[in-house]
Image: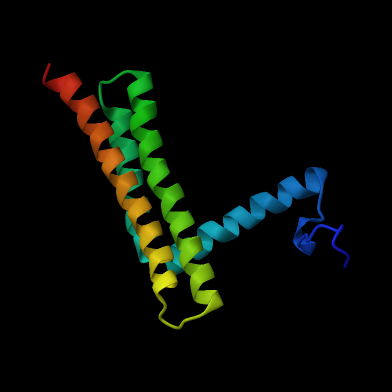
Length: 132
């Protein structure tokens, strides 16, 4: 390979409708793997499903429902990214290393910030609806 040729994965060769179908099935594989292997994902998914049901039943505006559900789904998005970071770090080496710890801790901190944002969003909506 020359310096001019970009380094591209063989898995990036699909295009068009075939790529869309492949991406969909890769995503389903990702959900299955997260469900099987990630305790935090399972716990958060259960809470998110319960939260979505509650949000849909609450007497708040459609926009407020959307925001309440969006911040819950964002928890799952960030948890999946965190799990991906952890998998890559473990794939590279299971040896304890300061940089590996940093990478995993950064991902965990991102999940925590997302949880705080979700709690704050729900608090603002519920306080505005039921307190004022």
